[in-house]
Amino acid sequence: MGRTRLKKVLGLFLMTFLLWFTVIPVGIGTADTAGELEGFEEGYQENDPFENSDTNTLVQDMVQTQESAFKIGGFVKIESEYAYNKNNEKLSRLRPLLFIETAYKINENYKIKAAGQAFYDVSYDIVAKDKNKGSNLDDEPYDAELKDLYLDGKLGDIFSVRLGRQIIAWGDSDYARITDVINPRDLTAPGLIDLEDARLPVAALRVSAFFDAWSFDLVTIHEHPGSKISGKGSDFDYYTLLRSPEISINDKQTPDFGIEDTGLAFKVTHAFNGGDIAFVVANTFDDQPYLSYNGLKNGVMVFTPEYDRMTTYGISSSLAKGSSLFKVETAFRQEKKIMRNDVLAQISSGIPASSVRTTGSEDQVSALTGVEYTGFTDLRLSFEAQVIHTLNHQSYLGVDENKYFTYFQATKAMLNETLELALFWVCMNPGNGNILRFSTTYDVFDGLSVQAGVVFYESENDSSDLHPYKDQDRIFIRVKYSF
Image 1 (cartoon, rainbow, N blue to C red):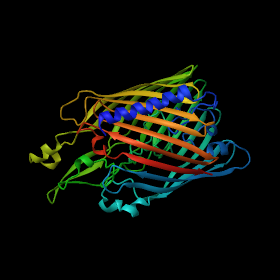
Image 2 (cartoon, helix red, strand yellow):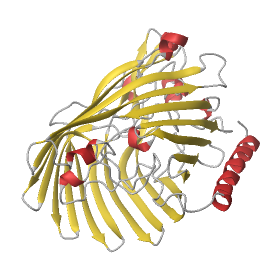
Image 3 (tube, rainbow, N blue to C red):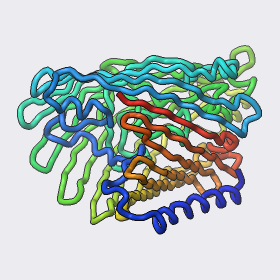
């Protein structure tokens, strides 16, 4: 999709939202819109761990009732995606999914929660999507996985603890990963996965302490799966720019589960009238892999995705003023591994495999500012701007010295909040690409909802990370029944 086409589509969508505001009668609903990407993700900052959770699930409310110590809930969802620009294999997803979560309240101080899901993507059978299946394929045709399994408890009036597989959402950004350093994310389908579904749980121990307006969180992380990435033959192949008969990419090598590769993260939060400020220090594994060179095998260059430790120092803050929520977030990342753009030249020069350097370890600064406005009836507007600056930038690094991202979202609730219209736009460095998503969600009746939408990918820069996916525009439909 060219720039002219993108401007026309974006202009049409923005005019549509303007019409909603000026023409649609006000007063249809009274509550603020709660879109799928909405939520300030404030994390675990309440004194009572049973009154707050890091995931937006049905069990949150059920556990708080006194009717039964054991509760169960979940949903059944059917997801379908159609890539209409592709020459073949246009049906990119047809996936029934079952999600079940349970909670058992042992007593007033302790509870246990477990959640898991299973799915099977029928499209693999219909269009033989797995005929090119290769390594690093995280988007498998079928899977059953444990999402959450943890023990939650209070230790007196000050301390609380959570032990097990969990999601810990830090930071104030709705979209960017700056001080949100605990959980990796699902990167297999950019623009199609909502934030509430993107975070991947990890095994961790979280100890929290509360003193008036101050809260302290210490987290030890014992599982490092890395973010999910799509593999060879997938529509969003993470290494599509490197695929060739002369290059082979092995399965990714993740750090061991246990004590030796434990990650550490610490956060101090101070709440004040209308907002809060948080300080984060963490030594964790980067959620995105780098490639190490393993030498030649039968004339083929062999690489392995691996993960390296990274230290993060960050600050995030939010402040509510009237109908606006202002947010700022920044982080300094020490010695982050960045892929080099001269790897093939090094190999061609004939130097030993052990001397080939695939990465450079450089410091980075990431900063974000944003605002969210809910002053219009049933209309929520959100805007965030982010810059990632690489210090001591060298010409051989495979990233720009400055990378810019802007995020815009508008959601409009209608018909007594049974219908929601949403626009989501991600703009990368000028010329490096845009992701534009437009969707509508209708609550048919209590528990049953239908969502339909379209996603556009646009990039004019051949070297952009998004350029290989410029023809992956698709229509999607999701039918969900919660029980």
